[in-house]
Structures are given as C-alpha cells and as structure tokens.
Length: 363
Image (cartoon, rainbow, N blue to C red; front, top):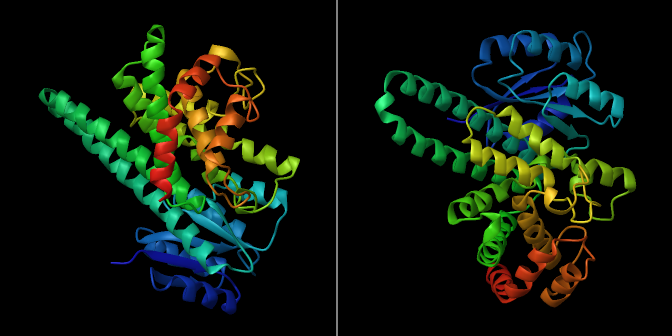
C-alpha cells in the first residue's frame, strides 16, 4: 500500500503539478485551503506520510495550519514541507520555529521534489520504527532480565542500522549514491589500523576501530539541514554560504541528540565526536570549536584525513577530481589544513592501500 501525501495549496495548478510529480509513488490527497487541510488531517492523520503546505492561502493560511498541527501533536509524527517561492530568512526562521522539516521551492524541479519527499518520509518512517522498537525493548528488559545479553546484541544491531539509514539519507540528500560513505569507512579503517600498530599508547583496539569506522558514516549527517541552494551549489560558496555550510557539524550533533535513548554509549560518543569535530585542524584553525592538537578526538582526526582524501580524488558538483598524487601532496603539505604529524606518518605508510581502495571504488 502506498503512503499518502497531502498537498495543501489554494492554486489548483500547483496542486496538479505536484500530484503529477508524486502520484506514481504515493496516494495523493489535496486541500485548497487551511480549513480543508485540517479536516483532511482529522480524518487521515494516521495515514499521511508527508504534508506539502503552501503559506499564502485565503482564510486559514499555512502558519495557521502549522499552529493547529502543533497544538494537536501532529507535527511530531507528520513531516511538513513548505511550498513557497519566498526566500526571506525571517520567513524561513518562522517556519522552522514551528517545526517544519524543509522547503520545496517554486518553480518545482520534479526530481528534487520526489527526492525531498522520499528522504523526509523515510526519515520519519524510521523514527517511528525506532520509537516502537525502543518501547518493545524497554518492556522486554522490564519483564525478562534473563535476555539482557541477547538484547544487548540487538541494541548493537540497531546502532548499526541507525547509522546506515542516516548515512544513506545524507547521501540521497547530497545527490550522491553512497560510495563516498563506503570509501570514507574504508580509508578510516586502513589509517586506524596503521595508527594502532605504530602508536599503541593511544589505546586503539579492534573493537574501538570497528565502532569508529561504523560511526564515520555519520560525519556529514548535519548536511540534511543545509538548504539545497548551498548544499548543491555547483560553484564556489560565498563567505555567508560557507558559514552556513559549516553549521552541518553542530546540526548533525543536534540530530543525534534528538534520537537519544537508543544508542549504546560508546557508539553515541564516537558518532558525536566524528560528527562535530571532523573539520577541526591540528593547529586550531578548524571548526566549529577551534580545537587543537590532541584535544581533537582521535576518532575525528582519523575520519578527517579519510574524508579530505576522498573529497580530493572524487568529482563533486563544484570541482573536478584531483589525481591521487596531487591529493597526497596537498594533504602532506598542509594545503587542506594541518593534520597530526603522527597521523601523517601513518598516512604515508598506507598510501598504496588508499590508492588501491580509491581505484577499486572508481571502476
């Protein structure tokens, strides 16, 4: 059975355009104003996956609908995408304060509309699944203490699933197919194993490396919250746009905080460290906290080099790929920021392994 999308817009043309874009994948319900939308929600709120909401409508406008949804607790369960041509920061802030998920800009780009609706819908579906899973696990723990070890294994499996699903959502949001995450995991593992061998005093072991590698999938989680016009911009970002892009580090941590309660503590710590600090630099010139030296968590330092290397040797919407030799030189000479001298020594030793992994993923 298809999920239902509710389209709320006073212009019939807009409703029909969105219906045509989405009807192959979803059941479509429509409302021409806010009051009709509330009526639809009263009847169907348990079955609606996403609401596409216009702001400017006669009678009850989009903000009125948001206030009513908020008062009835629907916004916690149903994601709302605002349909607008408005680009005012004030309006955007007001919408986000009401708890909306994102924007769909006019004129409509069909592929982005479909992707935006799918990503937001999938994320909320998984959130509901997690809530149900947590409730079930809590009850099991309360009634059957003898199953603690089995439940611990399930919790670890859920941690991995959470990380995998959230990582996939980021890649879809970023119009990538998932290879970046897999390569970063591979580079991180190669570098971490060399560092464990060369510097045993740091206490790395196979278990910690496994969790760091898995958690590395979430390094760019906060990009879910970055607007399309910045995230997908083909050219160089302005200073203001770059400042917005930099917030993906802290926004990712906010997302992790919002799903608190289902994480194994060690998994959550590594995910948080990597998400927040993978753009810090050894000389203190990174962001968001300008940490320096070994104040930067080792997990984040490992992922940082892996992420930078993959970014350099990969084609992106804003640049062509550098050769592997160019990428290695840029990292070792500090052209991408200053990294730990110890990590750079390890990086030199595993260059062939990095190159081999890069080549195998680009064939």
